[in-house]
Image (cartoon, rainbow, N blue to C red; front, side, top):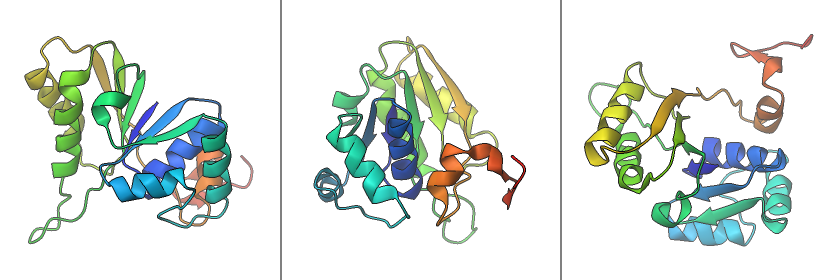
Length: 175
């Protein structure tokens, strides 16, 4: 699994997937952030995350990289978990980072891969990502799916590990 972006959603998701036993590489362009993560210094606070990251980094299930090109050649799944800040002026999501990620991975795709949009995006973004990848790599074999972000600050690890407990933002005690 490749996680593009090591912000709140990407780092928590990557750490949790590695805890499930998957081999995960979290990729970020910020070299300082990657070096700090390799030293066990996290850019965010979430209860339990530091221990989860450090444990899975030490056991080799979780890795960090600055290089998309060197990371995705064997990926079965690539999560796009980059920022979608509000655009100035109209308040819509700025999808430039999402589309940039699609352009960057497109020429590198060399086997079937599922591309999962984890960033908060409007309807139609999956089709645009598909079009971007096909434009830059006509032979790419991939599927695009959406996995909306549902992590609540302060309980993100529990939300990820047991998503049936979170239904439309309300904790379901019976699940």
